[in-house]
Length: 271
DNA sequence: ATGGGCACCTGGCTGC
DNA sequence: TGCAGCCAGGTGCCCA
Image 1: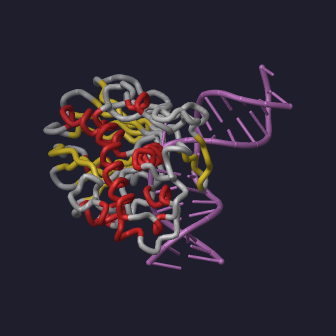
Image 2: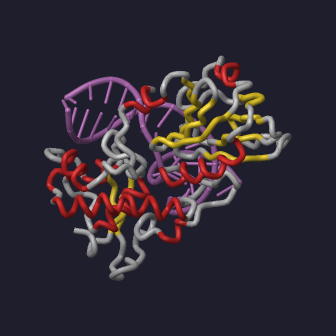
């Protein structure tokens, strides 16, 4: 499910309920996630207070007194804050029980999500160390995109989804950002002009900002920590709109396959 | 170094 | 109703 806006919405949703609380227990009902949850992990985090929440790319970070929990929601993961004693539902793999009595439930049908714990600087964790700058960093500019795209032969859509180059953008927002920038997803990254890359940098930020403001996009199973779906779906211009008229020009939106994923674009507005 | 394809999973929908 | 096939918000890893 979750791209940057959904992870950020989740972070904001849980923040007031977890910061300052002590972890009484971490219940691991299903350790077989993308990477197995280590057996000793619950014992290492129990008793620690949550100091703050953070996000890096699509990773949600819970900073504890002695270390940091790194949670990834994968394709189908979501977090819910629930009162104590609410029985786990199907695919509720993890439950973080807090001293407030509330519990944070991690649900993930496909089990592509993951949980790690480190007592080192999380920035040097292998999963985070090689990530590109955040799209909201001052360094994420057309100039930056220009620099990383020279002599890249991949389609620009693939480039947007490569987390070593651009972070936080997944299949929905890649199509949406390219639409806003007026660039076809199939264009070779290294052939894009400076003005196009300026537009693209701006479009990436604008799409992500708008989606965060709307609480993310719910297509199927995504819900925020309060259980409510995101409202950005109504503001999608191309994603999952194949055959429907472009909101600007009325031409039918097209769907194509790139790699194993679907891309959507307006053949008139995007060149 | 770069790019492409695969793997990891479950579940919902479509069409025969 | 059953079942095969396809598709789905991600991404690390292996190979050419």
